[in-house]
Amino acid sequence: MKHTISELRAAYGSDDLTPADALRSLAEAIATRDGGIGAYLSHDLDAALAEAAAADLSKPLGGVPIAIKDLINAKGQPCSCASRILRGKYTAPYDATVIRKLRAAGAIPFGRMNMDEFAMGSSTENSGIHPCRNPWDTTRIPGGSSGGSAAAVAADLAVAALGSDTGGSIRQPAAFCGVTGLKPTYGRVSRYGLVAFASSLDQIGPLTKTVEDAARLLQAIAGPDPRDSTCLDREVPDYASAIGRDIGGLKIGLPREYFAEGLDPRIKSLVEAAVKQLESLGAEPVEISLPNTGHAVAVYYIIATAEASANLARFDGVRYGHRAEGATDLLDHYERSREEGFGDEVKRRILLGTYVLSSGYHEAYYLRAQKVRTLIRDDFSRAFASVDLIASPVSPVLPFRLGEKLDDPLSLYLADIYTLSANLAGLCGISVPCGFIEEEPGKPLPVGLQLLGRPFGEADLLRAAHAYEQAARHPREIPGSAANA
Image 1 (tube, rainbow, N blue to C red):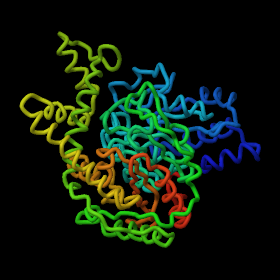
Image 2 (cartoon, rainbow, N blue to C red):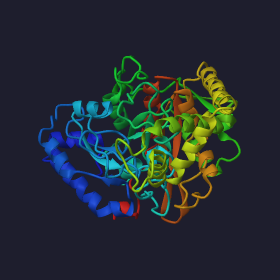
Image 3 (cartoon, rainbow, N blue to C red):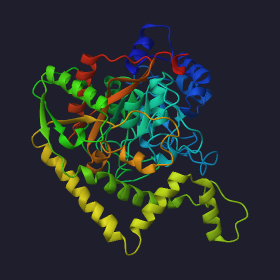
């Protein structure tokens, strides 16, 4: 289904199209085309049609189907986190706050989207169910961990989707798949009902076909929640009013460290051209420095894995989830259940996180990482004293081929260098398509422009992203791929 949220809402009002028609169209597209992509883990058309029959089209998202990353609880739907430890063994007994808010806005949660297991990865190859492929070139990865969400939106197998971003897991797959991905400020959107990877870094956000749609979805899911103590009680602006406003006078910082060695020169050229486009619209580029950028990857992979080690301790096969057979005692049960249920990347991160929290290493690693995290946050605070937004690439590399980096996890970790600092500092960020690079004839690969905003600066972020999107007018349709076959 090629419709955006805005187009679908208009079609409901003026055409003979109904929410049931939209759902059936999506289900047919999934059956026909998703076999070559693998974006979906499951979908329940009958349950969605029952919701569509009662849809209130007067609501902001009335009758709009929204795909859901498979770590967000939706009552009555499976929630496996793309892991064998939960696959087929856990059905959500409640709605996450974002799901409750989507339903209140009239949306229909439809489809459980593929992802890296427990959101640990940058390629969706770490899915414990099956890998996901990039619809622009199905020999390549879609990014991760929200790869299924991004791939489905790009391939018109979803109108829009929710993902989660712990170190770039919305923005990076959005860039790789040529869609818009928004990471809200930490505390802007409730995490209640999100299966936690790293609690001080995780944030739920939208993946959409346009910036306007991202604003619509953020409007629906943002706001305080008494069930999440980290979700701040701040007024939610009217994000739609930011769309279309002039960006004249906005100062956009260009961090030297984000345009240095290691960045593909073709990506650098496209991002610089995007900045020139913003400048032609009235924005003012300003060179800045974020001197602690070089420490960000190490800091992130200490803090994130430490929090993962604690959060994933609950998956022990006792109350729910995979339970190994033939265990001789409780310890043997824990060991076998987790060994059989978790994939290699999850095990790697749990082991690393447990190590940095262990006696004798806590101060040397975890405590020191927290101190450097403060320095990284201070870098951004100083930068935002003189600029309104920060522009950079999303990734230093293009989407790589499936299996190309599986034996080299460090290179995967380093590819997150431009995205994870925003999570460490609690900032908002967005990826918008800024062009294509052809590695092979007829197979253009999308490139994303990243814009970062100060905490709770989503309105400025959306204003600038929309202005660029409208001026650049990059095509969305995927030429000659399985997605449009």
